[in-house]
View 1 (spheres, rainbow, N blue to C red):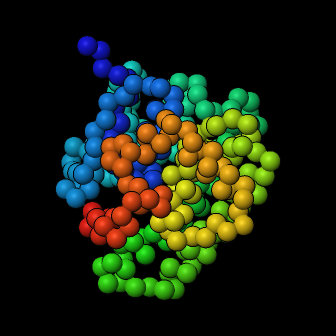
View 2 (cartoon, rainbow, N blue to C red; view 1 turned 120 degrees about the vertical axis):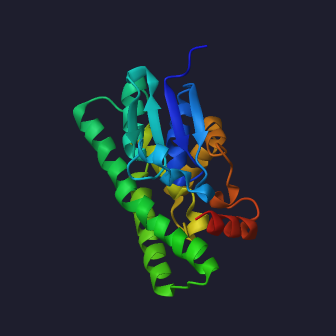
Length: 232
């Protein structure tokens, strides 16, 4: 039996779900290796040979001489070019896509990640830093306000079409309940969340390799807080 081109190494995190969403939405077959943070598999010698940063996700493209791609945004761009899906055509629109992809990677991801870290990992371990929490929650809200303005009169971030920008942004931005970021008054953003919440392929993707419903304001929050703090 011929193996799929793409072998994905990932875990159930916001960055980890990005390539899963792409592959499920694009209906591309792939092999999956789930990386266990509890065992620090992402720091193991065999994995660091693939990804020198020791983070997830990583893909190996068997159809391209076992070419390795790490960093979630770079993976999305690579897959979009390989399969010619979810990436606009034309120099200006592709530049716009790259700009908003960088906005997620440099802004929404890191800021919301820190908001989550100080509330969901540090605090349960007895490290309560109210200044840091306020700083990152406030900045996360500001970034969602920017996103809300971009989504005015648009179903998706770049316009009428669902793209890798939406794929990259959704797992992070939609986890606003886990980061305790208010979305009051962000009607365009809420409509965008609802729209992607209704996409079956994306909703399947965020259960792979393991569902973590508390990220999206579902499930047992207390249990999830303890589990998340332990695995990190």
